[in-house]
Image (cartoon, rainbow over all chains, first blue to last red; front, top):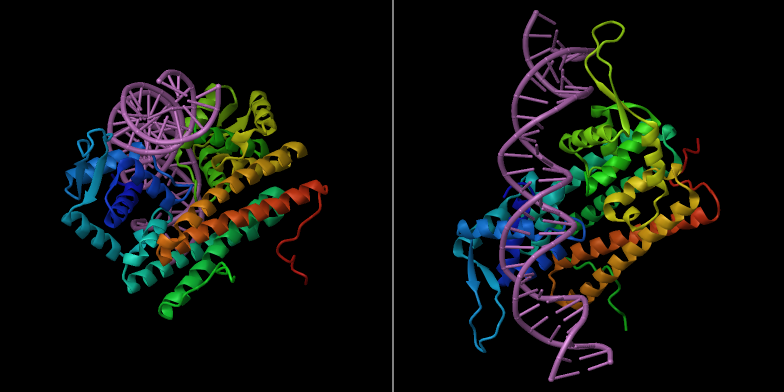
Length: 192
Length: 192
DNA sequence: CTCCGATGTATCAACTCGATACATCGGAGT
DNA sequence: ACTCCGATGTATCGAGTTGATACATCGGAG
């Protein structure tokens, strides 16, 4: 269950912490969390759940026979005490693994359950990760600008601006974190 | 060689069309093209090259013994006539497969070799693909806004704005395509 | 003169995806 | 009432991909 599934495990722990879920619903929520890119399939989810069960992080409740006799079979998963403990461990982890591309989104999604100092550490780590990437792109772009055709240049430029936008976003978030919890209304809240 | 490697094949064809290359350099350029995300590994590239060789799309030139005796072994690949033909076929393809997430970037990178009408078709296809995605996100966001905590909401919002930015970018490109080939200076070109 | 990182080709176990199979549910249309 | 069909639901498999690793040479820094 390595590679991305480390991320998948965290997503499952975090979602099941909010409420017990069955596989189908769990997958939908995981994919909503991860975004349209990076969506996962059952071929990842089910083996992951199986391993987490075996590891004692989850408990499975097969709610077939219920009131009314007819309910279709679903397997509802929930966290065990060990699972909750594991979740806390993962949320306390503020190292580089937290701000890489694969994991940052999930870590951020569970910031509400994360300590303020860890939040700040992750946001700053993510920012320097992106700035590092920006340096590399601007460097390469400076060296090759003349040799590239219009479209390739446009594509590189757009990629660069995506990174810069992401950095600005992180700057805002870091600033907000630093002055306590100031609300930041993005969309005008319907002034009616 | 299916799935992403359809994309990989196109990237290889396009890059080798510019100049013959060996595997190591080819990989670097493919990854520069695809961006930091979506980078590929040798475990994808080498099998792909092998298949393309077998299919007669590429010719391999092992430049070991050369003038000076000492040159290290490198295998230089170049396009055959069949390979060039295949590249033209691929570049003429303007269907849905061209504007999905996996392939759009590569198709765009080779727009300089693509007919104007195909370019426009791909850009518009990509735009409606993204608008469709935007609808889905705004819908889900409208339904669940109250139930989400601050950070989850912020993450969704950021994702949504990414899509919207992408759509604006495409709008600009489409407009530019429509009035012939007007230059669009993004970064002020060093007015010194 | 040696160490070390970049260049260069290549493979492998572990992991992931898209497709597929199978089955039930609720609603829309006739 | 009946049938169709898409959403819900669990599960597996072949094919493709990754990150690690192996092995070897090159050029430069100390």
